[in-house]
Image (tube, rainbow, N blue to C red; front, side):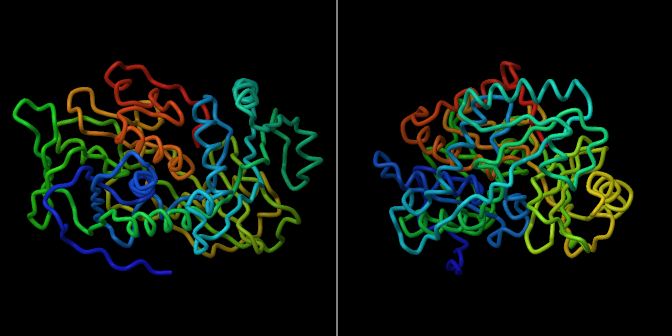
Length: 407
């Protein structure tokens, strides 16, 4: 179902809100603005990659989990689950919108030492208090329920099979864009090359496009994914977000498992999940994990041969005989400060708003984060869920949010 091509130039010279980046975060915010009865302004979304070929959204695992170590991150994902399972009703009972569900095979965290086992125990307490259904499992319990695992080194496992697993992120993304545009949000294929502030530096006045137009804006939202720091720098703002390379592989097993494979997080950091039809999706990254160029998506073939496949074959012996069918590299928008979202206004440039640094869990957080950002842009505050702990101010105050469940 194609969406009409974006124009390259804006229809107006001034907008109430300009969103830099039209991938999952920018489009979620744009759609939620159209849902907000108190917002009646104009919105321009500027996207440099109109086919979304290189954005993080296109390279995602498309899974959601509630196994976080902070209550706010748990509740953010719980809203995502509710939104996905009820997407048609959220989108005005539009019969064109598909009915979606979550394939809840769960995330299986495996601990091979008491230190990490204690982290899982403490995190489960937070998750249960927030209403999640996380279960802790001994090695024997894991082996009984999932006999394909090698659990010789496992001290403890943690899994939640309620609203935790695969969902169709691409469909949600498409319908956010489609409905937003139908409701008057303007999307253009272009790039911001400069940001102009007021004389005293406390407000963004305009953005300059690669095609030469200067666009005035009431508020500016930075939703530019791994390029977020580059966008912020145009406004004289330092932002601790950088692109980190992450690899994905799809493989077919000669001897497929006879039950769903949870999204398994091996202690090595390699993760693998059910993909359907005897195929599986696996992900990982090199031990040395530097920032990379925005255009660098090259695969590291040695990583698969020397690390990922041996880990898989050791953890799941049935995966000793497999055949790769697809592979790709993508980028995390890594918040190097504390690996959590950076939201809300800048502390000095009052109308420069952040929606950045999701460090690999952006897709699953996009419903709550887009809703909250739309509320902030409209009302100057979060109303449905208090997301203020994620505000940029904590970067200035050097007060990180410690989230222990980062993949």
